[in-house]
Amino acid sequence: MNKERIDTEGNKTLRLQTIKAITFDVQGTCVDFVQPLLRAGAKLNHLKNMNIDWATLSFEWRELYRNRLDEVISGQRSWMRVDHIYRETLDILLENKKLSSYFSIAERDELNMIWSHLEPWPDSREGLGRLRQKFVLSTLSNTGMSTMVSIVKHARLPFDALLTAELAHDYKPSPAVYQLAVDYLGYKPDELLMVACHKYDLNAARSFGMRTAFVTRPLEFGPNGNPDLAPEPWFDLYVDSLITLAKALGA
Image 1 (cartoon, helix red, strand yellow):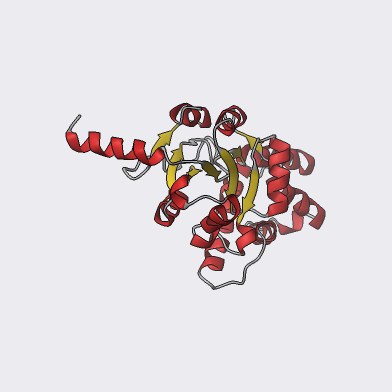
Image 2 (cartoon, one colour):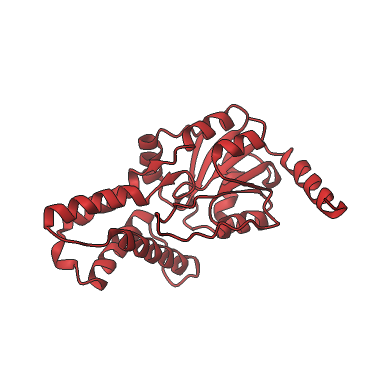
């Protein structure tokens, strides 16, 4: 190992020693959103005697949702709650796929509710529980407050605080969302660690002055997904689970 690498690792260790609270992205990072959608889709296929590819549909739904968020961030659209964005983009998706006539309003509403009842990854509860013994833990998610309450209760995730972009009427990667952690948790940016499986999120947190931890979620988009898992030199931590993160931080 050369001197430059030793210095870099040493600086990262020093930076991590200032951490007092950890904020988490939730959808994809702490909970799995694909499997609940696939199960609901399989049930609908059976009831309607259809053969819809729900794996592809769930990916495209998420993609439409992300595009809507970007339109809000850029000012092309007024702010709206995430659950409304999901519901609106579901209608668009079904129309694009020529499936609108097969799904009632009630069935669409029920599908949309799945985003409030997502499942934790196998390491999430234990990892968060260990980290909570040493740090203040909070969500910092783009989802809405009521949806976040439902997700955390359903998945039994041990957070100390729930913060979402709804409080800022903005969305990540806007600095206003990361400012929520400073304002509501009472710590300086360099005392906060942002944990996510999305690089855009961590890059924005880093620009805001927060420390960063990337957790790999190879199944975020299902078994056929292809998320970007490559490490970046600017990550303060790169781990394969929240349990590994807890170990790395001495929790």
